[in-house]
Length: 98
Image 1 (tube, helix red, strand yellow):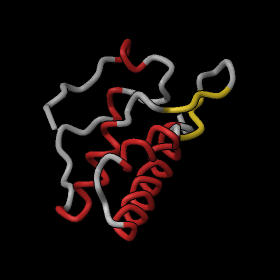
Image 2 (tube, helix red, strand yellow):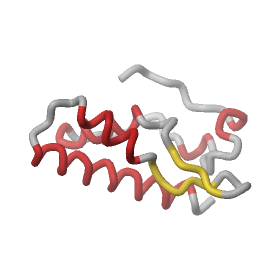
Image 3 (cartoon, rainbow, N blue to C red):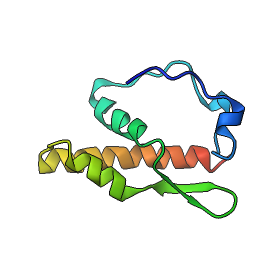
């Protein structure tokens, strides 16, 4: 995954995030890398609800289509799906508490 600089306040406007939410470093354990990488790929695939732009979750059809192209075993598909949903839940808690 390519390096992306910390987004500015203007870039984050309406997202529920602030520049301070972005840490310069993060440790991702090797077993979590596939889920993190997929989650990061889907950064433009969030549902929005209402005029406030509050996010309600990932667009699952996009997630499923991407996962289907990964040639995963059924067990690996289910595990990756569960892992991405954990990341989604944590992101929603963070975004919706600001």
